[in-house]
Length: 193
Image (cartoon, rainbow, N blue to C red):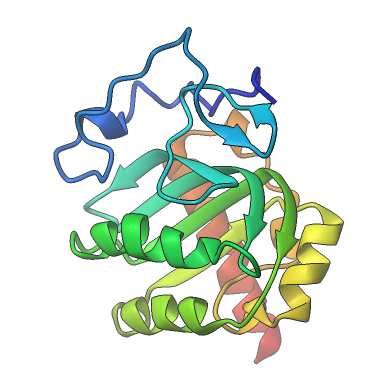
């Protein structure tokens, strides 16, 4: 896992450590010192710790005009033991909500497991952004991760499912990725009505 880097080709668009509004503003990264772990496995030092013991993130882009953020995740998302969604909400997302970010794309290509508990923090997150036409979209989950997310009914507060599991975001600009997610959401909503 130590050689899986957060996606870096969007750094010419945005750098969280240089954004004064970012929760990671001013961070310095040592490319040669590995300190963060998922269990016994070191992860690349570019990933950001937000309080969880098993889940790490990279804020790939924030667009303050459009009000969205794209966040890449790695590790094990464990709400059952570690309450990871609480850490994600309190120490990361709440900071972005203060700056009017209401649309969240969580890229889960590297989330290896999900252990759900209740969905109170998902509900709180959704309540915080729904009045601003906000949403949370979880993309590219592994099948067993998606099954567990659906088992604890995360889909009541987050856009998840097979429709969002084939997003080839690395070949697009951040804005193209955001517009693709918006398009898929709009079509999904249209089909429901």
